Image (cartoon, rainbow, N blue to C red; front, side):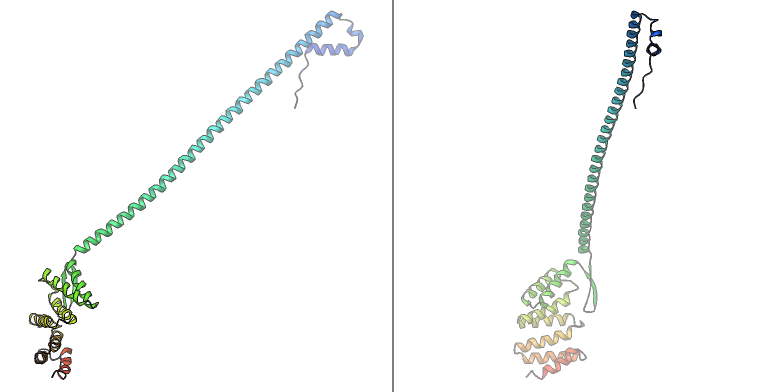
Length: 261
């Protein structure tokens, strides 16, 4: 909206005189009129200049304010960008920290499992075998299990070697009786009947109360029969029938006698 400028007093008086007509205008002579007009023009120019100066000043102030606002907005935007960068960096650090923690937990778990395995390897193993309960170290148990595994797999040559190594390494082992019995079986399975006879006899002589003693005597008689020692086989079966008459081996021995002639 355009603001109307106030009329100077001289300009207003001049307009009134002109409007009043020639009768009134004649009061002034030409020089005075010209002076009044010049003065009026100067006053009008001064008013216009003053108004322009004020407008320029207001415009400059507004421009300065706008510039300050722009600078503030730019600074705020820079701060926001810096904050975004810091947040992204913190998120990256958090993710890396989470990965480091997860990796540390995995390593701790692996170390714990390895430690448990080592401790278990050092702990004595509880064994229940042939009616007896005892404890042995883990290596001893592993050596025995490996030898028995070879017998069950039909690898009698390997079983003889493993059982022989076991007897030399653990001469006082609680597995001793069982090792002597299975040594006879491994030798028999290998076809080495002479050594099988010796192994079975050693087992029965050292452990007559062992639950497998009747089976050992029957196996001993069969080994003797394989070597054509029929007399020796019959004698061993008689021993079986007298020592363990109620055993399953004794019943099988009676049936075996009929084929030993």
